[in-house]
Image (tube, rainbow, N blue to C red):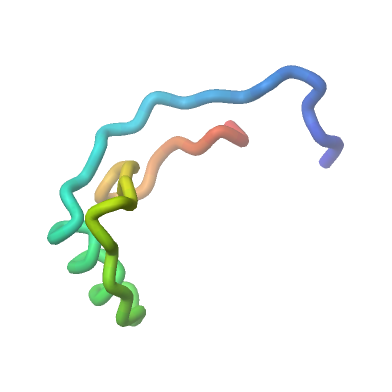
Length: 51
């Protein structure tokens, strides 16, 4: 659809990097999440800034 003209936002919980890496592994990705990265979202999916 068309791009919004107003900045979109959503509140999501922060996930620690160990749990974040485990979620990536469970999805079939081998990723290292450095300590300078922030992982956030819902473990079972949910909202994003497009909703």
